Length: 402
Image (cartoon, rainbow, N blue to C red; front, top):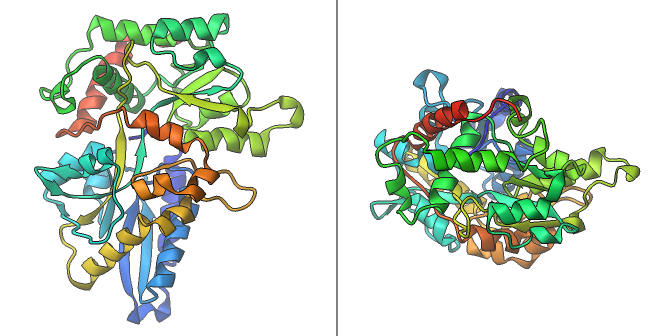
């Protein structure tokens, strides 16, 4: 799940760009496979091209038509968000999985020969004993900090985090926007309760209690003045990671792929005298959404086959998914070209996580994995709408500025 902001216009341009010349005149003998990829990853257009080229080399009789949905998280039919888009393959955020099933939009993929999946990834793709998707990416929130801030390691309470940060108030965390606040709300609920994740939201979005609001205020107090609640900054998904790269703070909270954004800032925008954070200075820990307990929300993005797909198109869809989550497919996406920055996306298969080549390209991956394994997956009907409703109430309860 993502806090969607100003970047959506770019994704629309990319989608149109892929579509504009997608079926050449000589393609009458080639089949077209329509794939809607999850758009909110580092350099999505380059990732899409890598998948397209890699698959088409193995299957020259297929043209892969890749699009990005600029309205991905919009639940209204008129907006044609992911729930109502037209594609053979959808890449579904687990936040929408139950809604897809309620609309009877999917069929079980039934793909043989896949590498073993991470347990939480497989759980996200399974409902009532049936596997409905093939996970590609996993993510959760981490505390990413500078190596000189050794006191930040192993802090499992907000009080301990505050002592480690000291008077500089060096925590960077976006606490604006319904998407982001909804995620933080759910992770706070999960970490503070032993209740099964699905039961937490069984009756919709409750009014945020005083304890949740108080904790959010405590977190906000750890941030530098002017940050945290600024919606304009929150609309720029990489803003806080890039500020961290420039040493605005000692640590930031975000997904693993935000490591790509901070390293990209250092590599491409920093002067030597700026002393920006380098790869060897980055460390990772869990963020204490509740004191003494690490149980972050784990989000999973998975490939799913549209219910209408059949015949040769169904075979092509299964072949594409099998390639995309294979070790060669992951290596193509996660091993950067010389001089480029690793994407630091977390794969959904054990084979990819354990691969020495991928670990060499992104050496923090084992630490990210160990923290994520302590989390939980939540899937419930109307989960996206429920979280947005809860976030709206939280937003009114928090100060507008910090």
